[in-house]
Structures are given as C-alpha cells and as structure tokens.
Image 1: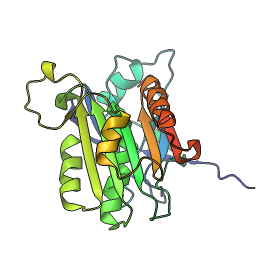
Image 2: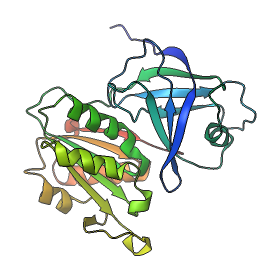
Image 3: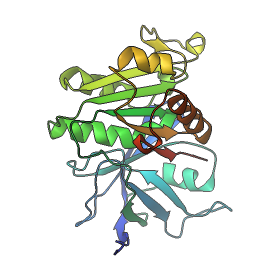
Length: 245
C-alpha cells in the first residue's frame, strides 16, 4: 500500500487575533495547490527565527479553518516559549513553511452513523473546521459537539460554534463550563465536565455514533474510560491528544 508523503509549502502570517483569554488565532497565506480535509493538521516551521530554544522551530497544529476558505487558520494557547513569542510578532515578510496536510482525524463518510465530538480547550480546533465545512456542504450527518472549558472567557470560538448550530439543524452544540465561579460572564448552559450522564441527556443512545476525542492527554484518557464504561465499542472511538500546547 502506498503512503502519501506530506508536501512542504511556503507561507506567511497575514493576521492574528485573540480568540479567548491566553489564546490566539493566526491566519496564514494558503499556498497554491494546498488541499486538505477538515480535521487534518500541518507542521509549521519558523525559518531562521530571531530566537529559538530547546523545543525547536516546528510545531504541529490542527487547521481550524474549513477547506472552503481561502486562508488557513490555526489557533494556540500562548505559552512563554521562543516559538510562540516569535509567532506572536511575526510579520508578513517572515518566512515560514508548512508541511502537510496530515492525519485522518476527519469526519466519517457514512451519514447513517451520528458523529459525537468531545473537545477540551484548544482541542476544539479540528472540530471547528469540521463543523464549518459540514455547514457549508449542507451535510446530512447528525453532528453533536460537546465542548468543555473552565469559563466562557477561556473557550475559543464559542460564539461562532453557537451561531453555526443555530442555523444548521443537524449540528447540536453543547458547551459546558466547570469553573463559573471564576467567570465574569453569565452562563445558563451545562456545567461540569463531560460525563456519561451528560451524554445520555443529549444523545438518543450512546452506542452507535462515531466518537472523536480531542484535548489534553489526561482529558482524552478520562473520556475514553467514560465511553468504555458505558459500553461504547473501542472501534467507534477516535482520538487526538493536544500535549504541551
């Protein structure tokens, strides 16, 4: 069986914006010929950056923008590393490369099987791409997005997902917050972590859907245990860990 090797492309930072407390989105020029599926990722490399450290000049990012848009967008928590300090101030003239796309964390094709997405924090990025592309394509998939954060202030892309769910009848969005006592915003949605009881209240049945898990390693492991204890078939669970972001 042949394996497709991700290609390398030149790009640049076109714009940036804060999308949550401590989280930034970066809009990159989309190279000619760069095609991808919603949910895939890229390796972004800074070429000859003004500073570097032991973590190196390359990071892997899920593409948060959908394939139909003309630019590429990534988002990340802004830790104090050389890579992220440089990226935060990168000009359009700074040379960057992307290698990809890569990964198979993409929506399954069988529209008869619902899709359930369980995201924590910045793990929402591949699911944002999938949600926006599904809406664009008028997908017939039954889509359920559960999104766990401490507070609304920490939840990147919360508004756009709520707006998309409001106009796409087959897209069901369930955000949940675990530390609303530390928030300055009002909240009338779910509270706490994602549990089997929460899933049961929002899904017709736990067995049958394809589950996609993305977030910190500890959360992904915990959600796997929740699903396994509920009797979900291991073959129906797909996951991607966001470590050290």
